[in-house]
Image (tube, rainbow, N blue to C red; front, side, top):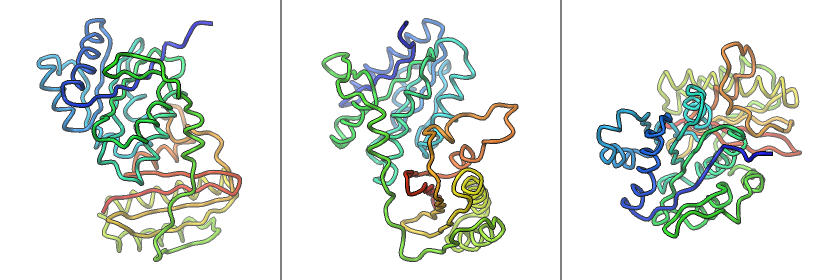
Length: 304
């Protein structure tokens, strides 16, 4: 059996020079081979690459990951798959989902994303290069990168990662979510979408969200509760609160999520159902998840 054409190396860099040395030839090699190339990295690094690529930057799909990948749960469907699916044949992507300014709440979702890339693209003729800033990231983040990437590129060259084990990463980061705020609005064990939406409208507006964000919260609460009713335990507990400049929507049910890529596959044009969790990932600024024998909790965050 032939090896999968999918490649997912991590690039460990210490400064701008190492960043450019590791990324620019990757882009130029792809362009020279006639391969579509996309770059989704944080804004400063995006500008660094844009300047170095010069006129060739116009031949590359450039995205600021702090916007496109603000919620790590949307990176696979909206950034990576959106580009790869639009270009049959070999595709090259630089994706940098982990940077030093990521919060402790965001980071577990980033690691889960990196682990899931491997199953999401298995068998595809796609190469996704993921840069990691070894000078600014915590050593634990670099250890996680070794576990989520089969190959590591650093100053010493290219090597297989002996720590590669994305399934273990998914298990380790499937942790109970941090405690909620002391001030929580709760609607327990309900199937009543109208009541959940009314409560969400009141508390989202009071939490300082814009009218557009309030509309997004209503969609998220509707989709998460509907998912609990249809695929979970038949009811869901809705909890809402504000903390640290964010409005949080949580839905818990007694079911267990068995598909780790749920909500991360792009919807097909003919698909009539199964878009709910995907929509949640598209609308929220962050989605966290914990699932197990005692139930499943989805938590969606909106920045105020």
